[in-house]
Image (cartoon, helix red, strand yellow):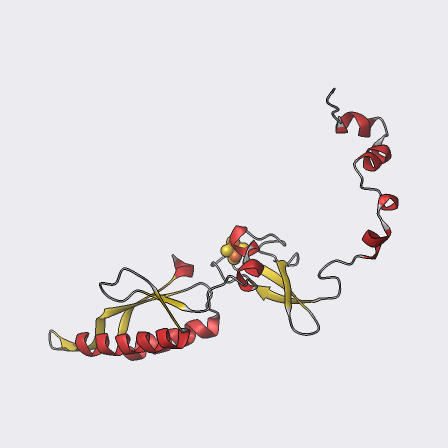
Length: 190
Ligand code: SF4
Protein backbone atom coordinates (compact mmCIF):
# COMPACT_ATOMS: atom_id res chain seq x y z
CA UNK A 1 0.00 0.00 0.00
CA UNK A 2 1.35 3.42 -0.98
CA UNK A 3 2.44 5.61 1.92
CA UNK A 4 0.61 8.98 2.13
CA UNK A 5 2.59 11.98 3.34
CA UNK A 6 1.23 15.45 4.09
CA UNK A 7 3.33 18.37 2.91
CA UNK A 8 2.29 21.04 5.44
CA UNK A 9 4.11 23.92 3.81
CA UNK A 10 2.67 23.16 0.42
CA UNK A 11 -0.90 22.78 1.67
CA UNK A 12 -0.85 25.92 3.82
CA UNK A 13 0.66 28.06 1.06
CA UNK A 14 -2.08 26.78 -1.25
CA UNK A 15 -4.71 28.00 1.25
CA UNK A 16 -5.60 24.50 2.29
CA UNK A 17 -5.07 25.06 6.03
CA UNK A 18 -8.67 24.31 6.91
CA UNK A 19 -8.79 21.12 4.96
CA UNK A 20 -5.54 20.09 6.58
CA UNK A 21 -7.01 20.68 10.05
CA UNK A 22 -9.96 18.51 9.18
CA UNK A 23 -7.72 15.81 7.83
CA UNK A 24 -5.72 15.66 11.05
CA UNK A 25 -8.86 15.71 13.23
CA UNK A 26 -8.39 19.14 14.84
CA UNK A 27 -11.66 20.82 13.84
CA UNK A 28 -14.10 21.46 16.73
CA UNK A 29 -17.00 20.20 14.65
CA UNK A 30 -15.27 16.84 14.52
CA UNK A 31 -15.29 16.53 18.32
CA UNK A 32 -17.74 14.08 19.86
CA UNK A 33 -20.53 15.21 22.23
CA UNK A 34 -18.56 13.82 25.14
CA UNK A 35 -15.35 15.61 24.15
CA UNK A 36 -17.21 18.92 23.96
CA UNK A 37 -18.42 18.55 27.56
CA UNK A 38 -14.96 17.82 28.94
CA UNK A 39 -13.25 20.51 31.01
CA UNK A 40 -9.55 20.96 31.63
CA UNK A 41 -8.20 19.58 34.90
CA UNK A 42 -7.41 23.05 36.18
CA UNK A 43 -10.35 24.88 34.58
CA UNK A 44 -11.84 25.89 37.95
CA UNK A 45 -8.65 25.79 40.02
CA UNK A 46 -7.20 28.82 41.76
CA UNK A 47 -3.62 29.64 40.66
CA UNK A 48 -1.36 30.48 43.60
CA UNK A 49 1.95 32.19 42.81
CA UNK A 50 4.84 30.19 44.19
CA UNK A 51 8.50 29.48 43.58
CA UNK A 52 10.44 26.50 42.28
CA UNK A 53 12.54 25.33 45.23
CA UNK A 54 15.26 23.47 43.36
CA UNK A 55 17.91 26.02 42.52
CA UNK A 56 19.04 29.60 42.93
CA UNK A 57 17.51 30.74 39.63
CA UNK A 58 14.22 31.04 41.49
CA UNK A 59 11.74 30.49 38.65
CA UNK A 60 8.22 31.50 39.56
CA UNK A 61 5.44 28.90 39.42
CA UNK A 62 1.67 28.80 39.50
CA UNK A 63 0.32 26.13 41.83
CA UNK A 64 -3.27 25.28 40.87
CA UNK A 65 -5.35 24.50 43.93
CA UNK A 66 -8.94 23.20 44.05
CA UNK A 67 -11.65 24.68 46.30
CA UNK A 68 -10.92 21.81 48.71
CA UNK A 69 -7.28 22.89 48.94
CA UNK A 70 -5.99 20.00 46.83
CA UNK A 71 -2.96 20.64 44.62
CA UNK A 72 -3.97 19.88 41.02
CA UNK A 73 -0.97 21.02 38.98
CA UNK A 74 2.13 23.21 39.00
CA UNK A 75 3.21 25.20 35.95
CA UNK A 76 5.59 28.01 35.11
CA UNK A 77 4.37 31.53 35.82
CA UNK A 78 4.29 33.59 32.60
CA UNK A 79 4.57 36.81 34.67
CA UNK A 80 7.99 35.83 36.01
CA UNK A 81 10.67 38.28 34.82
CA UNK A 82 13.24 35.52 35.38
CA UNK A 83 11.76 32.58 33.54
CA UNK A 84 8.79 33.94 31.56
CA UNK A 85 6.67 30.89 32.35
CA UNK A 86 9.32 28.30 31.55
CA UNK A 87 10.56 25.59 33.91
CA UNK A 88 13.51 23.27 33.42
CA UNK A 89 12.94 19.48 33.79
CA UNK A 90 13.44 19.69 37.56
CA UNK A 91 10.91 22.48 37.95
CA UNK A 92 8.49 20.74 35.58
CA UNK A 93 8.56 17.70 37.85
CA UNK A 94 7.39 19.55 40.99
CA UNK A 95 3.82 18.31 40.74
CA UNK A 96 4.81 14.72 39.99
CA UNK A 97 7.20 14.71 42.91
CA UNK A 98 4.71 16.26 45.31
CA UNK A 99 1.57 14.32 44.39
CA UNK A 100 2.82 10.81 43.97
CA UNK A 101 1.62 7.67 45.70
CA UNK A 102 5.10 6.20 45.25
CA UNK A 103 6.72 9.01 47.18
CA UNK A 104 8.70 7.76 50.14
CA UNK A 105 7.35 8.94 53.45
CA UNK A 106 9.68 6.86 55.61
CA UNK A 107 13.43 6.72 56.00
CA UNK A 108 15.62 3.89 54.72
CA UNK A 109 18.13 3.08 57.42
CA UNK A 110 21.10 0.75 57.07
CA UNK A 111 22.62 -0.06 60.44
CA UNK A 112 26.43 -0.31 60.74
CA UNK A 113 27.70 -3.61 59.21
CA UNK A 114 24.20 -4.50 58.01
CA UNK A 115 23.63 -5.53 54.38
CA UNK A 116 20.03 -4.33 54.21
CA UNK A 117 17.94 -1.24 54.63
CA UNK A 118 15.17 -1.01 57.20
CA UNK A 119 12.19 1.32 57.06
CA UNK A 120 12.01 3.79 59.92
CA UNK A 121 9.61 6.68 60.61
CA UNK A 122 10.77 10.20 59.81
CA UNK A 123 10.44 11.21 63.47
CA UNK A 124 12.89 8.44 64.38
CA UNK A 125 15.43 9.80 61.87
CA UNK A 126 15.11 13.35 63.19
CA UNK A 127 15.64 12.16 66.75
CA UNK A 128 18.70 10.18 65.65
CA UNK A 129 20.17 13.16 63.79
CA UNK A 130 19.69 15.32 66.88
CA UNK A 131 21.43 12.70 69.06
CA UNK A 132 24.35 12.36 66.62
CA UNK A 133 24.79 16.14 66.37
CA UNK A 134 24.80 16.40 70.17
CA UNK A 135 27.34 13.57 70.58
CA UNK A 136 29.63 14.90 67.82
CA UNK A 137 29.52 18.43 69.18
CA UNK A 138 30.39 17.25 72.68
CA UNK A 139 33.33 15.23 71.32
CA UNK A 140 34.74 17.92 69.03
CA UNK A 141 33.86 21.28 70.56
CA UNK A 142 36.93 23.52 70.96
CA UNK A 143 36.74 26.43 73.40
CA UNK A 144 40.07 28.06 72.64
CA UNK A 145 42.97 27.71 70.25
CA UNK A 146 46.40 29.39 70.50
CA UNK A 147 45.16 31.26 73.54
CA UNK A 148 42.18 32.69 71.64
CA UNK A 149 38.58 31.84 72.34
CA UNK A 150 37.05 30.11 69.29
CA UNK A 151 34.03 28.18 70.64
CA UNK A 152 33.58 26.09 67.53
CA UNK A 153 33.37 22.54 66.24
CA UNK A 154 34.98 21.33 63.05
CA UNK A 155 33.28 17.97 63.44
CA UNK A 156 29.96 19.03 61.90
CA UNK A 157 29.20 20.66 58.57
CA UNK A 158 25.87 21.94 57.30
CA UNK A 159 24.75 21.79 53.68
CA UNK A 160 21.34 23.39 53.24
CA UNK A 161 19.05 22.46 50.37
CA UNK A 162 17.72 24.88 47.79
CA UNK A 163 14.24 23.84 48.90
CA UNK A 164 14.75 26.04 51.95
CA UNK A 165 13.04 29.40 51.97
CA UNK A 166 14.55 32.61 53.37
CA UNK A 167 13.11 32.06 56.84
CA UNK A 168 14.24 28.44 56.99
CA UNK A 169 17.77 29.43 55.95
CA UNK A 170 17.78 32.11 58.61
CA UNK A 171 16.76 29.59 61.27
CA UNK A 172 19.28 27.03 60.04
CA UNK A 173 22.06 29.63 60.18
CA UNK A 174 21.02 30.59 63.72
CA UNK A 175 20.98 26.97 64.84
CA UNK A 176 24.36 26.14 63.31
CA UNK A 177 26.06 29.25 64.66
CA UNK A 178 24.63 28.60 68.11
CA UNK A 179 26.15 25.09 67.99
CA UNK A 180 29.53 26.49 66.97
CA UNK A 181 29.40 25.05 63.44
CA UNK A 182 31.54 27.10 61.06
CA UNK A 183 31.29 25.00 57.89
CA UNK A 184 27.94 26.23 56.59
CA UNK A 185 27.02 26.05 52.92
CA UNK A 186 23.90 25.91 50.79
CA UNK A 187 23.17 24.06 47.58
CA UNK A 188 21.83 27.26 46.05
CA UNK A 189 25.34 28.75 46.14
CA UNK A 190 27.13 25.72 44.72
S1 SF4 B 1 12.80 25.51 37.19
FE1 SF4 B 1 14.89 24.74 37.04
S2 SF4 B 1 16.12 26.58 36.67
FE2 SF4 B 1 14.15 27.26 37.49
S3 SF4 B 1 14.45 27.40 39.74
FE3 SF4 B 1 13.62 25.37 39.27
S4 SF4 B 1 15.43 24.07 39.11
FE4 SF4 B 1 16.14 26.17 38.90
